[in-house]
Length: 302
Image (tube, rainbow, N blue to C red):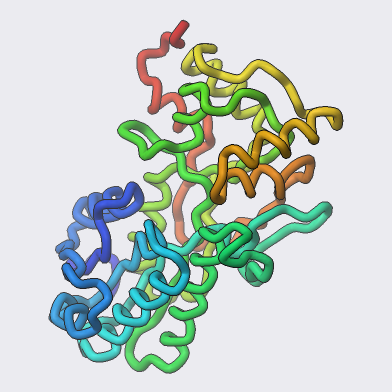
């Protein structure tokens, strides 16, 4: 089927920030959006939910789940796809963390790279995303009659209401200093548009890194200040070498992937080749455009 045809599309989890935007974008494109099953670990429930659907968007698989639970969900969903003869296309919301969980000096990452370093103890979110995607490709390799595309968004930003993105953290005063780290940022609306394109354009295959712009934290803070004022924003600049020890100590208090991300990104520029994503036909917004929509009054806060 082509993009001009109305399709019945199952969206596995429309409660996530990405899922909400994907479901809305699919409806705007004329598609019939249907929910995933209430028992997402049950292949039979997936088979029933996918009856008469021609496509499945698997999103939110790792939210609130460790790698084993997320892989079990994907195995159940794709077993349901294999049993449901109507499904032609599966679009998986993966994560940039499935490509790499940290920059490397002088290295440019692209979709041919796989994260080999994450584990349940180091960047568990990136580990879960990697294991989920590997499981999905195992199903696709033996699948008949359906194809898979995996999308790898970077750090999400967007207009409100948000889900506690990095801009919220900045204006909320959660980050007390400016660190020497880069952010691979992408507008959630562009991620949703990429899902629609990946679903409709059946000739596209493989993996696609979705990044609108890579910015140093210092530059991101400057852009947020220009659009939203200075309230809550960090002013202490620890981008020099002397700040590294303090930053590492502080990062342990954050816990989870975020603290580990700070430690693994310190002082190394993040480079991602996103040229393959041009095939999706999505014009990714610069960060300044997203912030202009996020703070539309034109008058920065005090």
